[in-house]
Image (tube, rainbow, N blue to C red; front, side, top):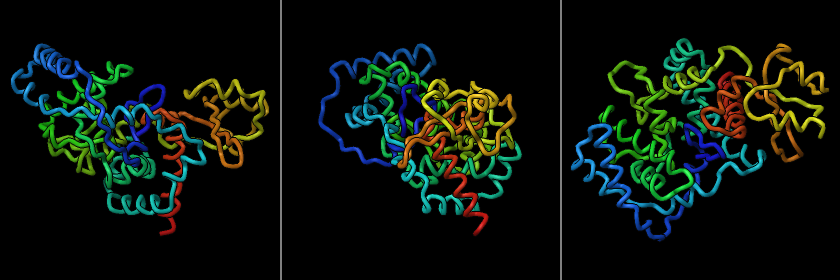
Length: 332
């Protein structure tokens, strides 16, 4: 799963697909001491039984491969290298199958949250190939390793470890059976613990929020996440733009969040086939294609996709996979 300069609230994608060899580097000398200190803090702050928590954390295994993985940014690829990993005929066909098998759930999620089935399906397709691979690491090992042996992001992962322990207590989950990505993301939609606690929904009303195997909760939770982050039903996501020159670099550098008006881009000579309303906000996205740079509008709904994973590459892969799924479904 991807890591960017700003760590995504839901860490995703390539880390699930790339095999990582375990190396034999020794764990830091203060690793166990930090675990014990953390256990005491959790006991004081949240009332965990210290004996039981120490017993659980005593089985934590430091994984050097996790440190190696997080130290290699997965989304450093050019768009023409990244796209073929996720936007494939095989993945689109599997997406059609997933949609057909879960048609009623997807319809219910769209009705409640306004997020179309092809987008929900594409997210799950990019994340875990519709649940076929959800990660190999014990979440407890992954979060502990990063919390206490990766200083660059220790504060973030210490918080995620805290959230994970609260999550397994609240949802009555078996901690040692919880597997996920190297960054501790879990289940078919790859939610990290804080996102699981904040955004997961019990969509089938069975009294549990299960993102590991319950497709109703998975579909509902992805849709709920998008809704909470501002998805606008029926609004466009992106479209190609052209006529961009070096004079427009400041527009590209303005960032991921929509802050430029369509009128502003048009007045600067930038073209688009179906311009949104002149006062619509957008970003201008540059992607490195095989034949040169491609430019796209990053409208509000595109930006919402990047809240799932802070990468324009990721969001464009989700968008284009969703178009392929939709096209194949219409012809199936």
